[in-house]
Length: 424
Image (cartoon, rainbow, N blue to C red):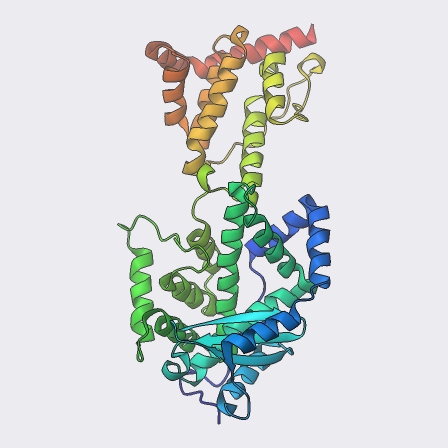
């Protein structure tokens, strides 16, 4: 008989329909399909031609003990229940590896899920905890099968790219974050498989610590204490392939309780703030969009659309064009919506971008600086911008104070003069 003593309710607290690829995984798959169509086709084709199934089986048989259903009926019953709850119909083969730390891993081949247990996992975990561990591994299989194997293609692409010595840092970051999100997805699958939060968290703690008995409520309170401590620097994971257990436990609690901020908190924990030194491919897209929007904001005034400034803008974006050419302007151009503050990790970068534009056309005198001062303030990077103006441009401190004081008047006067000239 299958033990369900650790489940809090006979009815699963989470539903299979709640288990979907996370937003980051969806966005990265869409990005790779759109931006790397040839590489995507290669990876998809390589997946379809995969011929290593026999090698996987042979390697597992050589280096582990196969746990046959006849000899281990309870274990297989847990596996079948987990698979049923997850909607996985693949054939499941279970193995025990040699001595080592408690862990589990899955080897997927088309239509087959080979799960390898290691260490004293079978001795330490009870019924629903085993369902959670087996469900976690089967959730990997489920993810690879979703949408025609799309996320398996992403995983193959990222692994191949990360193994290439020519890979950019953004590729390595994307591979790391995709792996972290994959574990988060599999943790949710563990909850679905065992029917509740508590056994899934209990299994995580036991595997991490080696303990035979744990108090889940106490650990969830501990995780909460870590994550809400205002003196803590941050709760961003330092893991390279798996988040820390306290991150995983809190993420699962928020998800099973259907907290409105569950996805946002997980994204913050796994990705951290947007910063230039940790950009992945999606982060590069976001920074590119912020940069383009910043330049468009700065050059929205027709009298700032000089040839030197437009030429400098096109060094960033060759297709950049202002809303309306200054030579064809006959009426005021509607202002762009006010910019929103950007993450602190981009403040120095945007300050440098604005300083470059201030210096790009000396004939504009203080007009570019006056416009950039207001924009830097709106973006939240006024302090580093002013510091760079003083240091990089060697602009006198008193002169900077004067331009700040008179910025609105300078820009209004320039706009009036430009409108008169265009109407003449």
